[in-house]
Image (cartoon, rainbow over all chains, first blue to last red; front, top):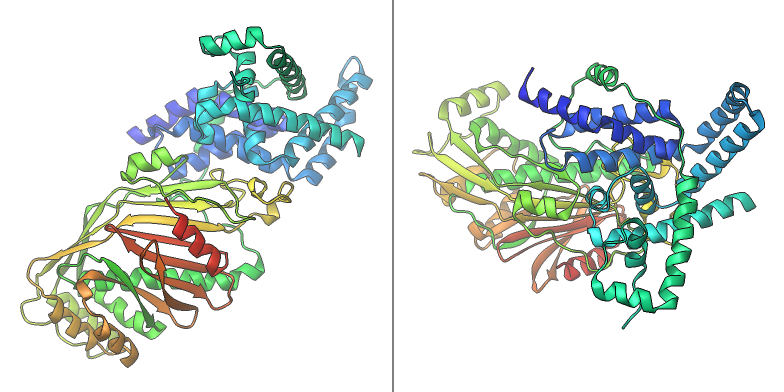
Length: 167
Length: 380
């Protein structure tokens, strides 16, 4: 194995769970999140050296953007969710509660998809456990800006969710 | 004392210690800030609940195997071509052709000038036939890189600066509708050596069946050392949705751009580039020898020859070839120096190129000429 391949494997092992976690936070779908994470790593490997200093930040940002872009293919996703919801509900102790959870998730993800990429990314990266410094690196902004971006993004998401439920 | 900023209050929720002593004292004394903090904490809790996701269990080893099965293509320069709307294709073809021609001809002419360090720019109208003729120059010797070009796509202006050593130009104000999402490309200095080879030239001429003029005496074995870069490029806009280093168009600073689907995502809206002016040195060939030689090549139009002869000092002028089928050009003043403004024939795109303090700058985009000039003049 070449050193390039070794570096990539190390990066993959260190970051895969986190990258998939970011995608899952956006998509609320573990299966699709892993699909996104793998796509992100493949693209990274094609473009960059795994030993690049910016590798983790690139992966985090790419995970958020790729997942958000997928989320915007709303029609396809909603169709699948509608088909999926009764199945999931049937597997739970409380089918009614499961249906409600699915509906909540759908509304939140639709609201996230309506937001601009930067605030949406700030939210999902932070909610995925990245530190302020890591979120700043991923988005290419100063750490001091994250508090403000996060605050605005949270207000925007609540507004969007409210808008979605009132339609 | 002024109230605490939203950013400071929000960060206090996640990290109560990340606050200065004076800010903390203000917070303790200020009912307004406490109320704002409380409202923000409510929002933060609500959003954390909203963004709850189903549990994710990953199998890293099996995921790695999956990724290894993917085809291992490795384009060196990180942009994948955006998906094009049919209406964009004609214009992109024009711009693409123009870009290729510019690269070819600038390189060709840079190569022939023994001490070439441009200080100004000048437009030269060229045709496809001119370019085809000039391309033949590449067969007259061997090109090797003593320092390979190593362009990289990076996330931030700081990283671009680290790679190139150049301060990334800042656009003072983006026109309405241009995305504020930026992708950076940066390249350190690269050095190419072109060695003229009489035998290769003869073979190339024989292959084409054309009677190409022989190299001037003494040119065989002459080496031209061409230094290009370092350079940085800022791409404003959103690249292919499949390219994660790009973003969706909803980052646009237009008031309406918050809900565009993937089908709306394609071409960069604005490109700003800065590069050290190319430098060419030569061991034994003179500019005049090679200029005469180039102008004697079959296929070079009399118009191009006349334009080239009209250039006052070719060793200090960067020629901006303007493909007359696709683009128009005019001389403009940018940042107090002479520049060349370019426009595509459809009127949808515009660009401007100038040289200042030893650096070549270019601004281009799907904008009006006046908008491009305003951006260029406001560049810092």
